[in-house]
Amino acid sequence: QKEVEQNSGPLSVPEGAIASLNCTYSDRGSQSFFWYRQYSGKSPELIMFIYSNGDKEDGRFTAQLNKASQYVSLLIRDSQPSDSATYLCAVSGPPGGYQKVTFGIGTKLQVIP
Amino acid sequence: DTEVTQTPKHLVMGMTNKKSLKCEQHMGHRAMYWYKQKAKKPPELMFVYSYEKLSINESVPSRFSPECPNSSLLNLHLHALQPEDSALYLCASSPGGFSNQPQHFGDGTRLSIL
Image (cartoon, rainbow over all chains, first blue to last red; front, side, top):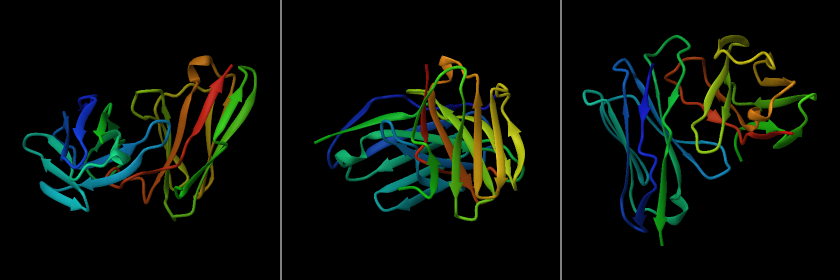
């Protein structure tokens, strides 16, 4: 049983601060990692994906992957109130085949003005 | 607005009704997915179609029946649903059926069973 663990939060950060969202996974064979943002009552929106160890940056967002520690994180710089949402970590297995993506429960982020 | 379009946005139906949810994408993606999401829970995979063939059925009850008429369209036929089936139903697509490709979600259909 593949597991993806996230702290459900809420994680509260002041506006302008760095928000750090963390995720661990159980399957060492996992190869692809995704971060989705979901506003209340809305559908998940893809923010970042990362396949290789290290950092991947896109604007205010940085995804970090450490396969040895089975750990993936999302950093949000200069947090804005509009970033307040639930952030879902999703993990999938090796490329090839129709393996499904496993979602974590999501971390609720609150950015305080 | 997303590039995956789902209709209707809201649906209320009785337990004896038959209805269908529709999903359409024009990104040329060859894999399409149905998820069910309850409040404060992550999306739960129901079905995967890859190149118009059903490739994954997550042991979903037969009262849910998927259909993929072509590579752009995905339907979910509903019959004799139960109150616990009330949820947000999400459609997603990805370029192919492989797990390393990110999925893009539609806005969802919020389903209420009376």
